[in-house]
Image (cartoon, rainbow over all chains, first blue to last red; front, side, top):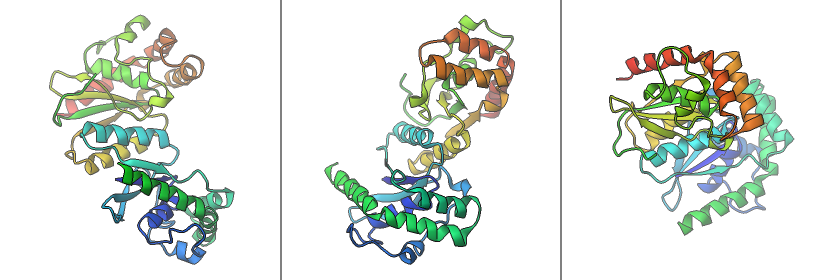
Length: 152
Length: 158
């Protein structure tokens, strides 16, 4: 089980999960267009009530379940809680991957305008542009996750 | 402490600092009284009192089993209790635990200004393992509120 995590599970986590599931190119140089990113299901769609709520997006070629998750400002708290619950249930703790680290100012501003202020027409393309800028980094992260999953 | 096997009801007390939730857990488990206000040095009887820091936030710490077989846990939640509660419920569903396993109790509403400020100051100036009496002193005034919350929880979770 893999949880791609970002602030609101609306932008970088959605794109990372899409790369993992083969919905977007897995090569660093093949950066998708802003329109392709905006057309992804769940891109820039989540609400505040979705914080802490993992969303199942599909299974990868090796059968791993791929989720997206937004932990808002409570990354540490959410991480601890999820790990504890899985441990109590005697289940393997999911791999939680933070995808937010590289997102620049424009991407964050776009996400905030769209999700926080409701200025979707302005914020969504800006967020997609911001994600596009860090696409190679997201591909590298996903590839690292995939190779890690093959070692366990 | 290691929790027992199976899925008995689990009561989780959450508060901005783990120590505040520890007091609620201590009252629930009977190591602290349900009436009056204990002396500051008595607070250390509460499990994990003043031993958890920021790095422990979110993790569920098993404190013991009450007289009715319910497991009692605590968690430091910072200002993210609603998110913590949602994450626990959602993760429980994904991990295959029965829907009603976790009962999440937010202690923050019964903490007064002194307790909140004290918790923050304790985390800033002292940290895990130090400043126990200071932390206990900040919690004395809102102790009856915590005890009332625990009694209500005990009645509500059957």
